[in-house]
Every structure is written in structure tokens, then in C-alpha cells.
Amino acid sequence: MADLSRADAALPLPKRTGADLEARARELLPPAVYDYYAGGSETETTLLEAPLAWQRWRLRPRMLSGVSAPELTTTVLGTPVASPIGVAPWALQRMAHPEGELATAAGCARTGSLMTVSTTATVPLDEVAAVAPESAKWFQLYQVHGPAYTDDLVRRAAAAGYRALVLTVDLPILGRRLRDLANDFQLPEGLVMANHPDQAAEPVNPELPVSAAGGSGVSVRRLSEALDSVDETPPWTYANVEHFAGLTDLPVVVKGVLRGDDAQRCLEAGASAVWVSTHGGRQVDRAVSSAAALVDVVSAVNDHAEVYVDGGIRSGTDALIALALGARVVFCARPVIWGLAIDGVDGVADVLSRLRTELAHSMTLCGVASVQRVPRDLVTL
Ligand SMILES: Cc1cc2nc3c(=O)[nH]c(=O)nc-3n(C[C@H](O)[C@H](O)[C@H](O)COP(=O)(O)O)c2cc1C
Image (cartoon, rainbow, N blue to C red; front, side, top):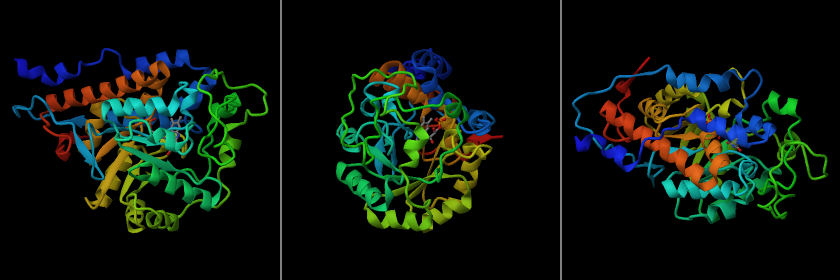
């Protein structure tokens, strides 16, 4: 009997669900900030479909397998991680909590989770890297202020100890996020995109109140204007993937891939891995779900490279299904946003522990011994 609960004994199963956490965060955040984090583009069809697409799959659990304490550790591009659930890059974290990216990094370090740090962070990339430097972090790249400045960001990320460069390729322009347009969403005063040239020198004051969107001060700017100022050159092509693969020794991961043929071309252009994503339903509305795209991409990549996925992963069982479909690891954004908003470092660590515990629980019930060997035939439609 004792063996049956070994995984649970180490990590008690949470009593609160992801939906509870979102509801709590919604109470705490200014409405326009909540909308910015929660929202998607246009009709939000892709946003809404993301979790449902994982829920469509059914498990075919194996009995009598003797699994009592499944192995959650794995590697990503050779880097060991405590679980296959990482944190996706998300922008402007000081709007959720005064410590922003610093708290997320500390929460990831506490749980041994891989963190991907966004170009549009509110703390400079070097300072985030310095939080628990031994804890694995990747840097997510957007084009900022033209190619020369962007190349320099890559070199800074490599020097700061990031272990991979994630090129987000699904944002040639900003998706039309109707909630933000309706709210006339603006960056709260005092927050800066700390990796951007005209703002990097401005100190971010963690004591500043994280006020509701709005206000008319000169430093308050519409988000779309801020992002537009970021990019003064044409959208990226495969030539840019080649460029960054040659610029740095860091492995290049292409994020935002939704088709098998695109995935193959990314690998031919020098990418080490591809990351299936709809950008949390914030870019192409009516795009295919990540769960469906994962099947296509895994089949095209055919074991030649690691494949990652994000979008609508809300439980350990969702993660297990993604692993069965061929993802090496999965990433989450919104659950971590809610954790950060509720309780800073502790909130981030709680959410990641919850997901990990749920994954162990599901694996035990299904007779899966290791996240590195989740059989494809565990799932069926
Ligand atoms: C508020 C917010 C900001 C985001 N900012 C970025 C970003 O700066 N760079 C990026 O590559 N993806 C960004 N994303 C997309 C996430 O990395 C990720 O692809 C997606 O949100 C995962 O889906 P989930 O939120 O359902 O877990 C953002 C997502 C959200 C919700």
C-alpha cells in the first residue's frame, strides 16, 4: 500500500485547480491588465480551442506495470531539467507582480524548471540571468531596433549564460487583440521594456504601484506603439534563421511553427529544434490548435530534432498527452502568470509544482515509468 502513494507523498496533490488560480488572479489584477494577459486575437477562437484540443485525446492506460514513482527528470537540448514542464516567454511581467521576471526566475529555479525569458521583459536580460545562474534559462528573441541591435542582444544573452536562443517567428506584426483595443491598453507608468534601446537605461522601480491601464502621463504609451517601435526592418525569413544559427554557438529554437513542412525548413536553415505554438491564440486567430499541429510537426521532423509545444496546457494530464504525441517538453504561460500575480516567487513555484505533481499522478495511473519514454499508443482520439 505504501508504494502506491510515493509520488503523492513527495508532492501533495493540489486542491485548487488552474481555473481557481485564474479567478483569484483576476480579482487581484487591474481589469485591463488581466485582459492583456488572458486575451487572444480577433474572435479568440484559437485561444478558446487550445485547452479543448488536449481534452479531445483519450488515454489508454496500461495496468499491472508496477510503476509507483515515475521519473520526471529529462534533458532539453542536452540540459538536465527536473520536469518536462517549462515556462514560455511572456512579456511585461512587472505588471503582474513588482518583482516580475526576477520572481519567475526564482520560482523556476526552486522547482528546477526551464524558464524562457522574453525580449519584452521588464528586467534587463542580464539581471534575470543572474537569478540562480545555475538554473537553465533560454532567451527569446524578437527583432529590436534593427539587425545590429538585435545581434548584440544575442551576444549579450550568450555572455549572460542563456542556454538557447528562441526565435519567435509568429509575430511579423502584432495580432489584433480586441480586448486591448477596447481597453485602450497602455503600459503602466514606470514600466519599461528593459531590453529595448531607448528604455534600457531607465531604472525600473519595483516599488512603483502597478496601476490599472490608463493615465495620461508622457511615459505612458500604447503597447502597440511600443512594439511597433521595436521593429524597423522587414519580417524575418529563413535567411534570418540561418543568420542567427551562424551568429551564436547557442542552439537556435524556432517558436511559432504550426506546419510540418515549415518545421523541416527551419531545421534545414540551421535550427536545432522547433517549438509548436499559436502564441497563446494571440496572433493568427483560427489557426490550427497546437495539439493538432504537434502531430503534423512530429511526423515531419521524424526524430531528427526535438519538438516542443505550448498552448492551453493546464494540467499534468495535458502535458502527458503532449509527451505521448511526441513533444520532448511542454511550456506554459498563463498558469504561471496567474501564479506570479497571486504570490510572486511562491506563486510561480506552486503552479509549477502543481503541474509536476499532476503529471506524476497521471503517469502512475497510466503505468508510464519515465517522461523520456511515453509511448505514442498511450493516446487515441
Ligand atoms: C501575456 C502574454 C505575453 C506573451 N509574450 C510573449 C513574448 O514576449 N514572446 C513570445 O515568444 N511569446 C509570448 N507569449 C506567448 C507564450 O510564449 C506562449 O506561446 C503561449 O502563451 C502559451 O500558451 P498558454 O498561455 O496557453 O500556456 C505571450 C503570451 C501571453 C499570454
